[in-house]
Image (cartoon, rainbow, N blue to C red; front, side, top):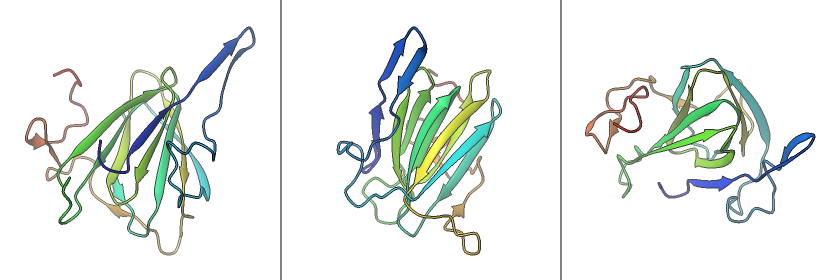
Length: 164
Protein backbone atom coordinates (compact mmCIF):
# COMPACT_ATOMS: atom_id res chain seq x y z
CA UNK A 1 0.00 0.00 0.00
CA UNK A 2 1.07 3.56 -0.64
CA UNK A 3 2.04 5.38 2.58
CA UNK A 4 -0.99 6.93 4.28
CA UNK A 5 -3.56 4.72 2.57
CA UNK A 6 -5.39 2.59 5.10
CA UNK A 7 -8.29 0.17 4.97
CA UNK A 8 -10.54 -0.78 7.86
CA UNK A 9 -12.87 -3.73 7.47
CA UNK A 10 -16.34 -2.80 8.68
CA UNK A 11 -18.17 -5.31 10.85
CA UNK A 12 -21.73 -6.04 9.79
CA UNK A 13 -24.11 -7.31 12.46
CA UNK A 14 -26.97 -9.28 10.90
CA UNK A 15 -30.08 -10.26 12.79
CA UNK A 16 -33.71 -11.17 12.04
CA UNK A 17 -34.46 -7.54 11.10
CA UNK A 18 -31.58 -7.11 8.62
CA UNK A 19 -28.16 -5.78 9.59
CA UNK A 20 -26.33 -2.90 11.26
CA UNK A 21 -22.82 -1.53 10.72
CA UNK A 22 -20.84 1.37 12.13
CA UNK A 23 -19.16 2.88 9.09
CA UNK A 24 -17.05 5.55 10.79
CA UNK A 25 -15.98 6.29 14.38
CA UNK A 26 -13.58 8.96 15.55
CA UNK A 27 -11.97 6.48 17.98
CA UNK A 28 -10.69 4.22 15.17
CA UNK A 29 -7.05 5.11 15.77
CA UNK A 30 -5.88 2.32 13.47
CA UNK A 31 -7.54 4.16 10.54
CA UNK A 32 -7.81 7.84 11.38
CA UNK A 33 -4.70 10.01 11.62
CA UNK A 34 -4.62 12.37 14.60
CA UNK A 35 -4.73 15.47 12.36
CA UNK A 36 -7.77 14.25 10.38
CA UNK A 37 -11.05 15.91 11.28
CA UNK A 38 -14.10 15.11 9.18
CA UNK A 39 -15.65 18.34 7.88
CA UNK A 40 -17.93 17.22 5.04
CA UNK A 41 -19.80 14.03 4.04
CA UNK A 42 -20.80 13.34 0.43
CA UNK A 43 -22.86 10.69 -1.35
CA UNK A 44 -22.00 9.49 -4.85
CA UNK A 45 -24.44 7.36 -6.86
CA UNK A 46 -22.85 5.82 -9.97
CA UNK A 47 -24.33 3.74 -12.75
CA UNK A 48 -22.59 0.43 -13.60
CA UNK A 49 -19.29 0.97 -15.38
CA UNK A 50 -18.98 4.67 -14.52
CA UNK A 51 -15.48 5.90 -13.73
CA UNK A 52 -14.95 8.90 -11.47
CA UNK A 53 -11.25 9.66 -11.78
CA UNK A 54 -8.58 11.09 -11.61
CA UNK A 55 -8.15 14.01 -9.22
CA UNK A 56 -6.03 15.08 -6.26
CA UNK A 57 -5.94 17.82 -3.64
CA UNK A 58 -3.05 20.17 -2.80
CA UNK A 59 -4.37 21.76 0.42
CA UNK A 60 -4.12 18.78 2.76
CA UNK A 61 -7.51 17.13 2.19
CA UNK A 62 -7.90 13.47 3.11
CA UNK A 63 -10.81 11.40 1.75
CA UNK A 64 -12.46 8.37 3.36
CA UNK A 65 -14.45 6.18 0.92
CA UNK A 66 -17.13 3.70 2.01
CA UNK A 67 -19.02 1.67 -0.60
CA UNK A 68 -22.44 0.97 0.90
CA UNK A 69 -24.22 -0.37 -2.20
CA UNK A 70 -22.92 -2.28 -5.19
CA UNK A 71 -19.17 -2.63 -5.73
CA UNK A 72 -16.31 -0.29 -6.57
CA UNK A 73 -12.69 -0.41 -7.58
CA UNK A 74 -10.99 2.42 -5.65
CA UNK A 75 -7.58 3.47 -6.93
CA UNK A 76 -4.79 5.78 -5.80
CA UNK A 77 -1.73 6.75 -7.84
CA UNK A 78 1.41 8.47 -6.57
CA UNK A 79 2.67 11.07 -9.03
CA UNK A 80 4.42 13.20 -6.42
CA UNK A 81 7.79 14.60 -7.51
CA UNK A 82 10.72 13.02 -5.61
CA UNK A 83 8.43 10.56 -3.79
CA UNK A 84 10.02 7.16 -3.09
CA UNK A 85 6.71 5.56 -4.15
CA UNK A 86 6.27 7.67 -7.32
CA UNK A 87 4.60 5.57 -10.00
CA UNK A 88 3.01 3.13 -7.53
CA UNK A 89 -0.70 2.44 -7.80
CA UNK A 90 -3.10 0.81 -5.35
CA UNK A 91 -6.35 -0.91 -6.36
CA UNK A 92 -8.89 -1.73 -3.66
CA UNK A 93 -12.13 -3.63 -4.31
CA UNK A 94 -14.87 -2.61 -1.93
CA UNK A 95 -18.55 -3.58 -1.87
CA UNK A 96 -21.72 -3.78 0.15
CA UNK A 97 -20.70 -7.36 0.96
CA UNK A 98 -17.15 -6.36 1.95
CA UNK A 99 -17.73 -3.01 3.61
CA UNK A 100 -14.52 -1.08 4.20
CA UNK A 101 -13.52 2.45 5.06
CA UNK A 102 -10.63 3.41 2.76
CA UNK A 103 -8.43 6.36 3.74
CA UNK A 104 -6.71 8.18 0.86
CA UNK A 105 -4.44 11.18 1.40
CA UNK A 106 -5.47 13.81 -1.12
CA UNK A 107 -2.01 14.32 -2.58
CA UNK A 108 -2.43 11.01 -4.45
CA UNK A 109 -4.45 11.03 -7.66
CA UNK A 110 -7.50 8.95 -6.84
CA UNK A 111 -10.91 7.87 -8.00
CA UNK A 112 -13.17 4.90 -8.37
CA UNK A 113 -15.13 2.80 -10.84
CA UNK A 114 -18.57 1.32 -10.25
CA UNK A 115 -18.06 -2.37 -11.00
CA UNK A 116 -20.65 -5.09 -11.35
CA UNK A 117 -24.13 -5.01 -12.83
CA UNK A 118 -25.79 -2.75 -10.23
CA UNK A 119 -25.28 0.95 -9.48
CA UNK A 120 -22.93 1.78 -6.62
CA UNK A 121 -23.45 4.11 -3.72
CA UNK A 122 -20.34 5.57 -2.09
CA UNK A 123 -20.31 7.68 1.03
CA UNK A 124 -17.17 9.72 1.26
CA UNK A 125 -15.98 11.88 4.09
CA UNK A 126 -13.50 14.73 3.68
CA UNK A 127 -11.27 16.70 6.02
CA UNK A 128 -11.78 19.98 4.11
CA UNK A 129 -14.88 21.80 2.92
CA UNK A 130 -15.40 21.98 -0.83
CA UNK A 131 -14.70 25.57 -1.95
CA UNK A 132 -17.09 26.34 -4.81
CA UNK A 133 -15.16 29.48 -5.83
CA UNK A 134 -11.68 27.97 -5.59
CA UNK A 135 -11.89 24.15 -5.71
CA UNK A 136 -8.93 22.16 -4.43
CA UNK A 137 -8.93 19.71 -7.30
CA UNK A 138 -6.31 19.00 -9.89
CA UNK A 139 -7.84 16.74 -12.53
CA UNK A 140 -6.61 14.31 -15.16
CA UNK A 141 -8.65 12.35 -17.66
CA UNK A 142 -9.97 8.99 -16.42
CA UNK A 143 -8.01 7.30 -19.24
CA UNK A 144 -4.81 9.38 -18.95
CA UNK A 145 -2.17 7.37 -20.79
CA UNK A 146 0.64 8.74 -18.60
CA UNK A 147 -0.66 6.87 -15.53
CA UNK A 148 1.26 3.61 -15.83
CA UNK A 149 0.24 0.41 -14.10
CA UNK A 150 3.45 -0.77 -12.40
CA UNK A 151 2.38 -4.43 -12.71
CA UNK A 152 2.02 -4.31 -16.50
CA UNK A 153 4.19 -1.30 -17.42
CA UNK A 154 1.30 -0.18 -19.64
CA UNK A 155 -1.18 2.68 -19.23
CA UNK A 156 -3.61 1.94 -16.40
CA UNK A 157 -6.82 0.37 -17.72
CA UNK A 158 -9.86 0.76 -15.46
CA UNK A 159 -11.60 -1.95 -17.49
CA UNK A 160 -8.88 -4.60 -17.27
CA UNK A 161 -9.94 -7.80 -15.53
CA UNK A 162 -8.27 -8.04 -12.10
CA UNK A 163 -7.07 -11.61 -12.60
CA UNK A 164 -5.37 -11.03 -15.97
